[in-house]
Length: 253
Ligand code: 13P
Image 1 (tube, helix red, strand yellow):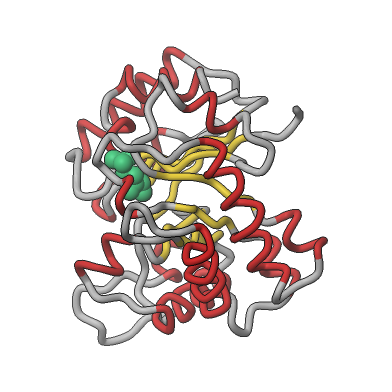
Image 2 (tube, rainbow, N blue to C red):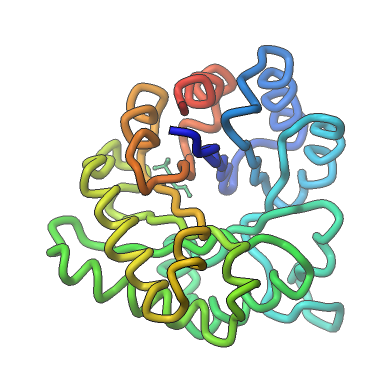
């Protein structure tokens, strides 16, 4: 298999800047095979510049965990736009289930954020997935089809190609209950590529990378990324430990 897996660390509201820099330095000092995986670190806004300096001249990229829906500058107290992070970030996570549920982000807002990211040449990592365990696969499919239809509203073929979709069932996040790797593969194929195929031709849906998130650890990552339609993982808790994250990187191919 010659796909290059994408490994995204979502640090959420963790790690002060010094601790984050030490973690990334540990990964750089100990190494992983950057020819076969691409690594993106998503720290808090506060640490973006320091992490960006730490990874200069390395193959690691930096991503934000969120952006405001207006792309430029303006009187929006407390918000950070795609324009402000451009030059520092290559990626941004959009529509994470924690933001959907805790901050009431809906699909219309998520679409505006996707448009805003693309406007400033930042690759959106769009999170989709069901909330309840034991949701039937047909319900998962209709939920994801709807999330994708909203997220990509107004997005051209060429812009859609340069996006990432993360399948993150919220019941699997932070619980230790990762989804079964064959189910993940089926969701990536039937629900995510299938959802994209409703909007674009197969050239687009074949090129959009589809990754999985939810209780990924070093011991299970290899089974997940070996699945044909899974192009990587989005890691929360296990990306906060220097050795735990390194183990994920070394087992991701
Ligand atoms: P955990 O890896 O802690 O389950 O978190 C997954 C996640 O939400 C990544 O965005």
